[in-house]
Length: 240
Image (cartoon, rainbow, N blue to C red; front, side, top):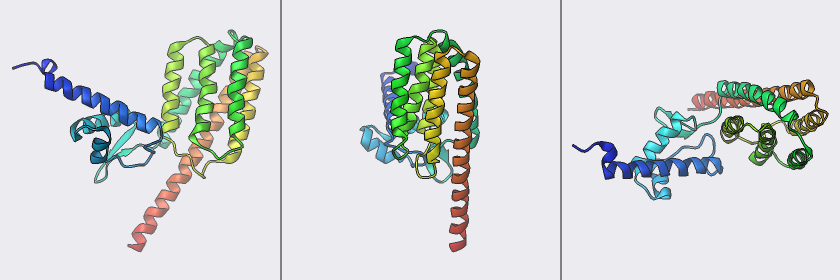
């Protein structure tokens, strides 16, 4: 009997599953599949031009990575960020970014300051608009730029993975506090000022407070969404 890894058919299925995984994940990252949306095998098979088997294997992998959920009687769902995951991700962000800021202060030069200013300006301009995922990406770019200035590729890559989970598993609608964007922009500017003055302690304190405030805002948002869902479930049962 041929070993499965040497079987051309087996390799072909693995390649199709890998392609399906990458393409479905790309749909999630481009917001073409939104948090809470059902992932239909047949629709995805037709869209990607593959059979249902590689789609099913791709969705199983996305479940393992936390991008999808398999719910009883509902099938695969694009996973929303939950309270516990949000807490854990923001705790990890705080630890990583405090380290990144500390390292970046010693490496900050004129060109780095200019890059940060431009990214902060993009974020600041966006606070005058309706809250969308684009603003979360502007925010991500500021923080990843600081990690890049720290010259630690592993740190930047890990932080990028954290942001990916925070951004693309989060809904962005009217429940978001509009004042938070303006406040966050001021915090960014204060952070850059402290870094420019080479005040490591103050810069680290600002970044920690910034992330903690963001965490509080996100958890509040998630709590309100849960309360709305719970109310809707009760109403649905009462009316049926």
